[in-house]
Length: 156
Image 1 (cartoon, one colour):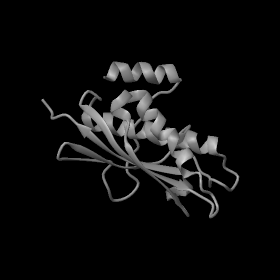
Image 2 (cartoon, rainbow, N blue to C red):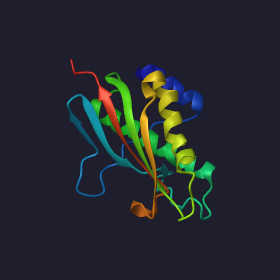
Image 3 (cartoon, rainbow, N blue to C red):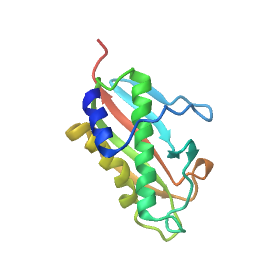
């Protein structure tokens, strides 16, 4: 699966970033009962958090790009935790938090940036349940934050 994902990333002109270290009192990934619970990941561009508020000078396209960058970081966290992506059997759920102006209601469109990448990388196993929620603020002023639950096969 890793080779397929590497090819899909290359076809999209993307690369996995280095998994970000926690910035507070938590761990990036907890594996329990065949599931990875992955802490919320922020979008990074050139080593800096992508900041902005949707509906207040930050476009849906920019939000989708930020959500995609969060999804890339999720995959990087999975790879860092497992050592490779061979054990991933299903992306179960994404939680997408969108830094939104009070009247912004297109959070699902923004969340598609993360969702579409999961399907592009994992195929049918990347199809998932999802929540897309508007919030008043995110850590470090991030435009988007995404967390995930991922099913993994048992370690051999």
